[in-house]
Image (cartoon, rainbow over all chains, first blue to last red; front, side, top):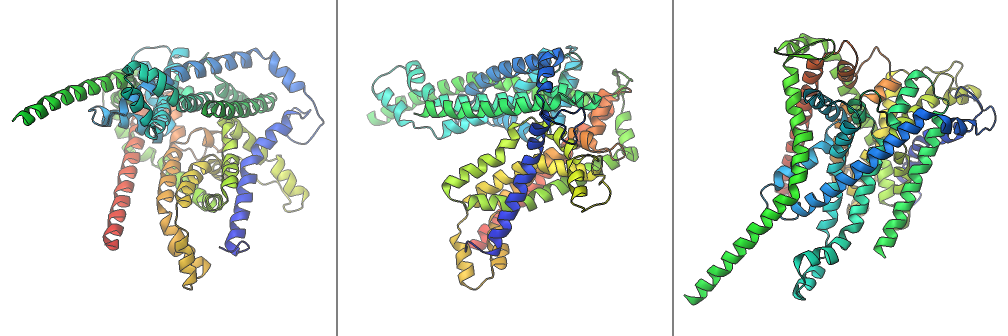
Length: 261
Length: 304
């Protein structure tokens, strides 16, 4: 297509529009977190007051601790289960393959609300009090599909010549696994773990149904604060969270580069 | 004779190896199989059971009845289902209209630009979901930035009432689900054979005709995948209508959540509504895939 053609210009303007659309909310958050005003309208001067308030807020501290704790534990468990399941799925003749694949893929397209409702009712049926344990279980459940798929997709593009070479050289199976195969799987495992971590810290709906009163994660706290109208510190909190996720992504890139070299 | 016995023992060994490998696969898969059965499949059985119970204002009584289904059949929940369906449809359409040109532009950029543009699309989604919705509330509110800007430019005389309307819900829905459309579209358009487009245009087709006759039909697969990824989660939307919409048009996700969380609770009705949603989704997926498969086969026949 000619560079100056009508369609190209149309695409470019659509792209610019979408970019503005995507970035407006984030820019607003960052700008208004430094605004010296109780309501979020009009510029009243620069301040860092809300950042200071943020660090004095015990509820936010607690919610932050909960979020990190849940994210770390559910990432660990879902990644370990994911590695095992991906290795199991490698064997195409294995009878449980179809069932496991269905159990892994179906949760991905289901609306979150259905998983939230069904888990809430399960915990009620079992008389398990909602709190940290139930949130942990829920987070492992929705992260597991993603970790299995990410690790499995890396295994599919796997270079078996190395494994075969090790076998030809007479290495024992477990030695082959730990010395040859596992190191090659590491980038996939890291990618899966980071995905699980971000999914966990971002989740609202499923946590909302499984957390009950007294165990707030950050998204739950933020939603409550929006509802109660106590929103002054949220902009500051959000800006820090944007910064935190960006940092996470940049370190991921670094780690991945280090691992691949 | 000798040869065949040799082959026999060899296959015995092979069978043993295959068996060993299958056993290994069972062991490796077992934790995930158990976990997903216990916490993904079994909970739906509980939902089925709870949909057949008698509701209490706090919990349920373990008495079996079809009361919840009778209540739903009376038609009281037709409107929220209709609204959710309409919302999911409109969201999907807007995502296609906005997402297609973007995906096309990225797919036809140089390798270096492709990565940069894709990252630009994804970055906003590393920000917390609730926080992004909150930000839209600030932007669209009656004394918010959009209205201030439009007023100062003299484009409007009175602030627009966008927040707490269905439009606010649609805007944020499109915002949240757009990447789920752009990414599958991109991956399909990227693999298109663009020489076909050039050929059509060399043969005298106008740019528009070439697009509608060649490019668009060839990217059908991406539109299909993207539509599923947008439409189905959009059907169950709760928090976006809750934070952006109003209480006069309640969506099915809101009704289910209220019946689970707010007193007076009604878990049997919430369960039955969830099951109906599940069935609708299953029907959509199955018909979608079968139409898609048929088309594919018909095209293969035509090609022959």
